[in-house]
Image 1 (tube, rainbow, N blue to C red):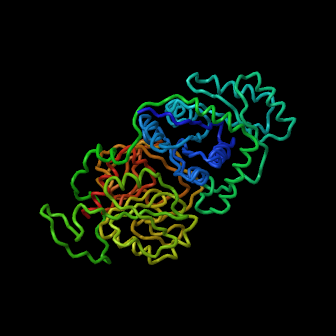
Image 2: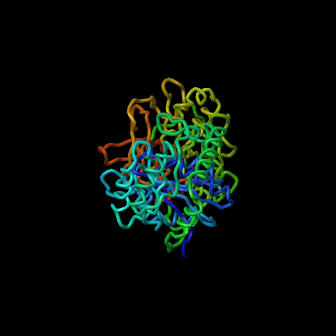
Image 3: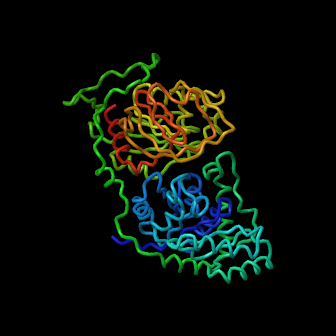
Length: 490
C-alpha cells in the first residue's frame, strides 16, 4: 500500500511560538475550502486535538513515537488520514525537542522524517528582526533529513517590521509562507495544565477557531502551503487497523486471583451466581460471546482519551457507550466494565461530589468485581475525596491539589495481574498532573516505574486498575482484548 496524502508538519523553535494557533487555523481554513482535512498532534497532548477536531469535523489523533513506537507512526497517520485531501500535523515543543535523555525520540523532527513530510516553521517574531534569518538557518540546517520548507512569521508588529523580517529571510533560502499580526481574539484561556479544553467552552472555542481561520486566511499563502503539502514523499505500508491489531495480539490469559486485592466491601451484596456455561464461566443470559457493554466517562470533566482506545475495545467485541459523570445519575444500563480516562475532576470536584447517585453506582460496580480502568482523573474520581470533596470511595486514598507539576514520559512494567495486563507487561506511559494521592500505591501496585526515580504507583484492587499513568493502547492491543474478555467473564 502506498500512502500519498498531502501533508504538512507545523513546528516551531520553542513552545509558545503559536503552533496551535497556526495549525488549527490552517486546518479550519482548508476545511472551509471543502477539503477533507485530517488533524494530528505530535506527542501525548489531549487538549490540542479537541481544537483540531472542532476545526476539521474529524477526530483529532496523536502521533507519539515514545508511547507507540516509531514503527506505528506512519500506520497510525494513515489510519487517521484515510480518505482525506490533506493532513496537518501540529508539532510539540521545539522542533528538535523530544523525550528527555532519548535523543530525537518523540520529537517533531523525528515524526516529520517518519512521515516524509515538509516542515513549516512558526516563528514568534515579536522581539527580533534580522536575527530571524540566523534562527531559521540554524533550524533548517541542523538535521539535513528534516525538510524545513517554509516559515510563517507570527506576532508581527507592523508593516515595517514585516518588511525587515522578509528582507532578512530572503537571504536564508527558506520562503515566507505567511505573516500573522498580533491578534488577541485568537488567544485561548489556560490554567494549571494548559489550554482549557473545547468541551468546557464550546461556544467560545468555536469563535476562537473561527478567528484563527480568518487570521490564517488573511496572512498565509494557502495555495503555496497546499502545493508544499502535495510534495510530501510517498509512504509504503498498511494503515493501522484496530481489528487486525486485536486479532494479532496475544490472547489474554485466563482470569487469575489478583495478588493483594482488597477484600470485598461489606456493604456490597454479592450477585447470585447465574447459570454456568460448560467451562464454568457465568453466562448472564445473553451468551458468553455477547458484546459486553463498556461505559466510557466523558463530558467536561473527563476529556482526555485517545480515539484508538474506543476503536480497540469495539474491535475486541465490546459495545462502547459514553456517559457524563457531571450529568448522568446512573451508569448506562447493562454496564459490565468502566473506563475513566483523564481530565479535570479537580476543577469540577463540587459538581462530581454532588452527583451522589452516580458515585454510588460506580462504587457498587467496582466492589462487585467489574473491570474498571482508571487513568489520572479516573484515579482521582475513584478516591475517597478531592480536597475534602467526597468522590466514589472505591480506593482508600485521598487526593489534593499540589504546587508541583508532575510531567514526563515513563517506562513502566505491570507489577500486579489486573484486568488490563499480566504482571511483567512492559508499557510506556506519560504523567501530567498537578495533584497527588496519598498513599501513592496500594498493596498491589499497578506499575513499577524506572525513571526519573524507581518507584511503584497505582492500585490493583479486585477488577480495578487505577494509576496516574496515561498509556496508548495501540502499542499493546492485548490490553483492550484482555479488558473486554474480563468484562465478559466478570
